Figure (cartoon, rainbow, N blue to C red):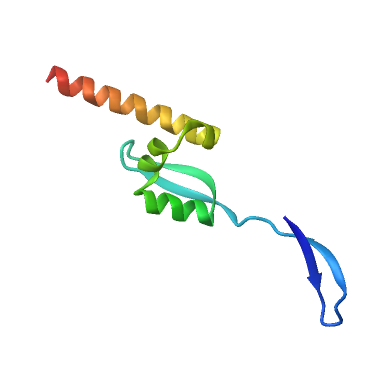
Length: 90
């Protein structure tokens, strides 16, 4: 997004607005490990609101997820499949 810096004398110079993106370590309770993600502050709030990274990834459609989150979604699906297979045999 672009805009203008406006001085007290009303001089306008072009500027760029960048999103607030940070590297964040997020804990996956299902996989019991930390995952490093590049997330905006709004993304962190969305993850917290949805109940954690595991629930957020499972609820979100594949076309809205980035490649690292798609890999996490696949890992979670494999984990739940193994867990249900172990429960049915026990």
